[in-house]
Image (cartoon, rainbow, N blue to C red; front, side, top):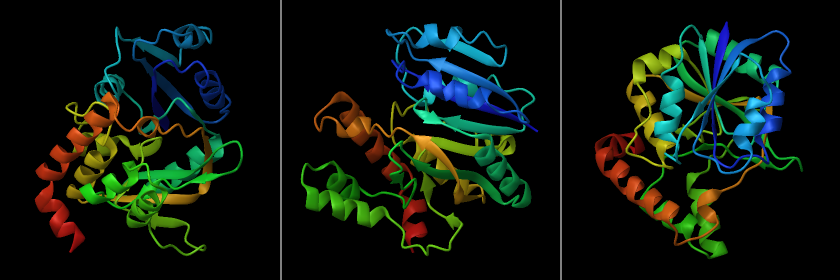
Length: 262
């Protein structure tokens, strides 16, 4: 089995070295890492080139094209890989987690996408599995009011048992996605009309529409230095783009989401 890692960088010099090192530490997994740089003006490209490893394939873009166009450029380069891992540059992975996810996919052919548990260096866990959003939920989470934020988080969260090791969910955030190459073949590529978000929600809707399941796996754990770009400034170009794309995505998938919530 062979894995294709699809990684984006954009002024990622703080994280990308450790991300690449974590992948290169594998001793029994075959892989290629397709790293697409979105026109970084820091040392990201210099750091990537310093590894001088033929398994690290760098694609340099002239500007920031966002997450979907850039990831698709990496996905289009895949040839003989059996599994695809879409990975954020601020993650650090490990072989044990990768093997666990691949073994699960091998044994559950009706699952199109899985994702691991994620924590930061302080051992604080992130919840990567969520319910499909609606406009009210997103407004609550974007509001600079703690009580509304908490209400929005509660609306998208699942009540799970501590003993649950595989949690079927509406969608997974795309900081670390593992899927068989057949998912890409069946579902297609990311929606390039979306610049930054909610490309993960939109793609997961299409996975479900193709009769494949999405599962969060509790036992495999990776490190994710969670940055929350859209939370840094409420009125920003990124947030405006996010809400515009969110509204379009909700409208275009209104029939599916209505039936899904029933």
